Length: 383
Image 1 (cartoon, rainbow, N blue to C red):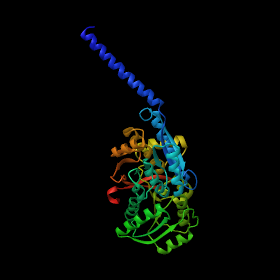
Image 2 (image 1 turned 180 degrees about the vertical axis):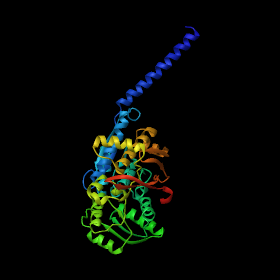
Image 3 (image 1 turned 45 degrees about the vertical axis):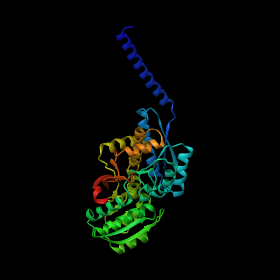
């Protein structure tokens, strides 16, 4: 064999060896078990519309990733658990997903109470948890395994106050809020910022989840003569509250938290929802959101709102972390740490050192029975 023939032989051997290695890697990836990602939220009970919408969105993100070959050749499987929006069930949900189902990361599609109780469980298990829309500050304080892609409660509260003072031109506000972590966190911040901006909160009253008759509360509102009504709660109570307010002749502008940014709110409140402005953290006009919404609607026959879109983004963040760091809990945590910026359907996600996000606060207005993009409050004004 000549020197040239020998060199050519070695080159062919190297190429064949690399090809065999790549093929072996592909076969190994194809034979590897599915990567399991857990999703928990209220799949039954009064908040089921939110929980299921978020779950559907995470499944859509997983299916799209699998259609493109999965994560480094491995398929992603979503495993789910129902927390019924209850703190005790949130603990059980994460325990099930991690211990029984083998999830290496979890997405919280839940409210603050359940997510707040679940966060220490994920932290102790050393399984990363990406929070889609729970707002309480204590959630990420559980430790380095808790990450959030949704505005903190205080940030949203500040934004609602800015909108009421400037858009609503209000000097006097009444605040009605759900008596739980979510309601207290947002309403407290809204009250503080509204007052700091020179306004006066003339009434602040809580209501319980499941309440149906708000006549007593609204009678107090009428007596306090506010310029604007701030509602911090969810769509079931919010719809009844707005309906009963209009029936009592209360015509002041209503600014509400993201819990009312659900199609169910419009459906239940009917014409009383017209003109209500809700915090949503979603830009309805973005092309990425429109593409997501179109595919979601084709699957589930309804237009998604802020909750599913944030579930979708939370799953996209987990998938990207898997690609970066590898298919293990430690890999997901490493990938999250490397992800200084990520573009989702709700805009660009930039994590702070505290694993929160910096984002502008979007507001929608209900017009003609539909949510319409309204105004944006820059992050620098509400942080």
